[in-house]
Image (cartoon, rainbow, N blue to C red; front, side, top):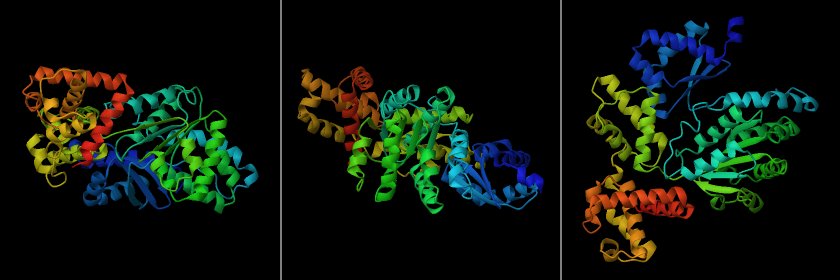
Length: 458
């Protein structure tokens, strides 16, 4: 019995994993349990963190009884198995029975240490794949991490689900924890912030709540759009924001939309969100998606012999990085279970029902040309003709760049669609625009605007 009390989720999972390794072959274990970790032991429940929904569903359907048996052998008790997708350990809270007069002290002592343990160590700047869709957001986050409250304060990052916002927030937290010279840092979701506030009201510990959130050097709040329609939460966050900002502490927030598009957000809170820097993350282009898959293949030590495999997967999944990595997981898993080699043909069979259409069938060069003509006020004949004045050449280069990034068309095909130009002209155009994106924020914004409009027309 004493052994069970001392058992931690991490140590129990290590024991369970060792037993699973003995029962399964190496490939099967790495495919399904290589990224699983022990998250929490709560009463008679043992929670495991898994990387995505597909892994969770497969483990529940095929390995749950095996896990239960391994847990029973390792821990000496029957525990309910819970599978959480990317669930992070939560902070250690001060018990509600502690008198409010002494609550701030234990919170102040334990919170930084507890939160440092709750930050996902895999989400770092080194593991973040940079492309034209996220380069500015990455640079801003890194600048904040290197000099909290000096570069951009607050920093507000927005973009659709699965594009890397949470990764960047954790990367900042990891960097500050490792290189911040003792600065305290806390990452929470908006849901955690709201639940902590509600519990503090219920337990009459509101002063402890304030102490907890207003003394960190860096506070990171994920998914603040969920403050929408919650006036009391917005009121408390307004005061938390002011307290941190006036004390010279860094605030970083993420959302699925910019502040002006979060309905019912108080104007005074919206204005504070806009005090610092607002930057977005767009869906990654094809080359960035391929780079993301290559990094995952390297990290997971997956051997890929078919050079077309990753390109095929990247062309099928275009708007969500988690779905992109999940698609790779599906293909690798199917190969492992059936013995079929990892090829583009296999990927087509596995993904045809999940992702039935690739990007190349949805976005055409003609559609890109039409939007560019509309945006710059030029005709299609001018865009594809021989005129070389700057007011024609620049839109033409932009259209070539977008055609290269958003379709799977070859360089010669793109050149053909622009008046029969040589593929070297396309290379020159895409290289020039890629350089301007890195150097000129206005060009970056233009490309993101046109990319978003192209995708909206699907």
